[in-house]
Image (cartoon, rainbow, N blue to C red; front, side, top):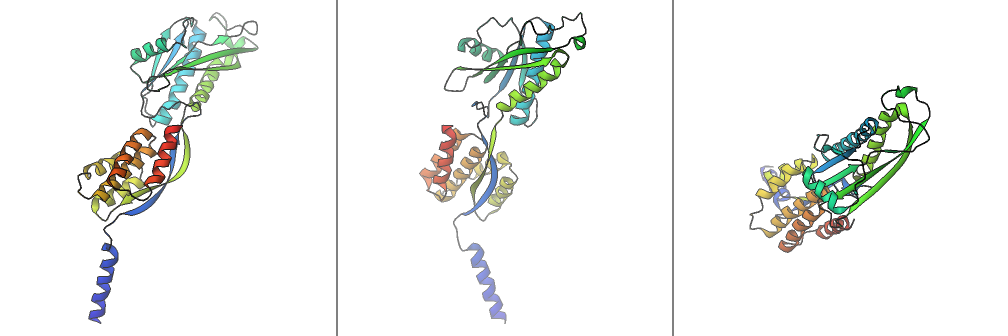
Length: 290
C-alpha cells in the first residue's frame, strides 16, 4: 500500500510539472472600437471650445451643448474624471474654423491633442424671437429652428484636416437650456467608442508572477499586469519572452492602442512564433485599418 501511494504521488507531480511550455487561457472581453464619427480619441488629450457671440442666449446655449458633450467624452474615455478641458472663445463666428491653420493654432493655445469647437447657434429668423432678457422667455410661444456647427481637428490624425459636422433642430424658447443638454449628449455619443465582444488568448507559466498576472488580467487591471510582464522580459528563454511580449501586445490591443500592440507583437514573433500570434496580428491589423 505504501508503494502504491508513493507511485500515485509521483504521477501527480508529473502531471503538474511535466511541461515547461506555456499554457493558454481565453479571456472573454469587449474591445473598444472606433467611434461612429470615425474619430479615434484613445490616449489623447481633448479640449472642447464654444463660441461666445456676445448674445446671452446664444452663449448659454453653446455652453450647455459643450458642457454636456464634454461630460460624455469624460465618461467614455476617462472613467468619469473631468479631464476634458472646456473653453469659451469670444467671436462672432465669422472666422473660418474649417481652416486647418486656425484650428491648429487653437490646439496649441489649449494644449490639447484634439479640439472640438461648437459654433454659436444660428436661429432661423421669422419663426419665434429669442428673448433679449427683457421678456420672460417662458411666455414666448412657438418654436425656434436652429443650426449648430461642430468643427473637429485631431493634431495626431495623419489626415491632418478639419472635420465639419452640422446639426439642425428646433426647440421651444422656454426649453432651450434643456435642448442644449440633450443635443450635447447626443453629439457626444457619436464620438464615444463602440464595443465588440471578443475572445483574447493570454499565456501563463507555472510560477507566482505568472499566476499573479493571470488574476490581474481577469480583473482587467492592464497596467498592473503589464508592469509585471515588463519586469520579466530579461529571461534568456526566448519562448517565455515571446509569450510576455505577446501578452503585452494583447493588453495594448484590448485598450485600443493598435500601433503599440503591433510593435510588441513584432518583437514576440522575432523571438519565438507562439500559437495564436497570427490570429492576434490579424486583429491588430484590422484595428489599424479602421
